[in-house]
Length: 254
Ligand SMILES: NC(=O)c1ccc[n+]([C@@H]2O[C@H](COP(=O)([O-])OP(=O)(O)OC[C@H]3O[C@@H](n4cnc5c(N)ncnc54)[C@H](O)[C@@H]3O)[C@@H](O)[C@H]2O)c1
Image (cartoon, rainbow, N blue to C red):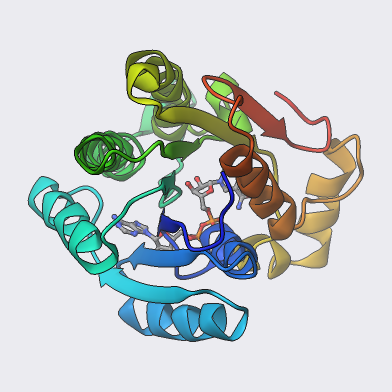
């Protein structure tokens, strides 16, 4: 896919990895639909994208976990752009906790249903809803589009992340299912599993905490957000890439 003039939706596109993807895809001359809950951050990211060469940059304040909002989102994107060529399912949250915690034989904590549900709602159901609605619009518009789900190395099972690991394994599996089901319409689907990436959250950690993380990574550094954005661009542009997950983790794989 030549990205110039193509319409690409990025969820969680206001900052972090989604912001890096938006900035990189803008430079290809793509038309961007940035989706997030934070409308202030969305506006400044859209302005930055236009400066970077985006053919268009529109913003949509949407909660990806809400079916009604997601259905309306893709109706609006199709109306505003008249096309839909790509979706990056990037919006995500964490609510980390151990499944159970015991002290002196007594249970002192457990992952709450709220912690479980919040992550499943955004990271799994949100991806399902956006993927389903994007695929429907692509079929309706006759677009040979591409859907990318942002998974994580945590999909292999990371301590303290029952909820997040389950969701990230789920979105990787969904990419495989969609690649198989949607190939007949010319639509591709794939996933990316980042390791530790130097978004604001990681970079603002105390130096000792960051050094500890970096010492566990064979590459001895966290990834740069643009290294994930470049992987998004590669998948969008490579028409034979479908149904697979790319780990971008400096060899950390859990
Ligand atoms: N940063 C990393 O090291 C890392 C590693 C592996 C995977 N990931 C994944 O990459 C994605 C982006 O992570 P990030 O580090 O950039 O996070 P971030 O918190 O910087 O950005 C996430 C964005 O998603 C938005 N968002 C959250 N809930 C939403 C909802 N319900 N509807 C719409 N938007 C919502 C937030 O407002 C925010 O702008 C996530 O899916 C995360 O799980 C990140």
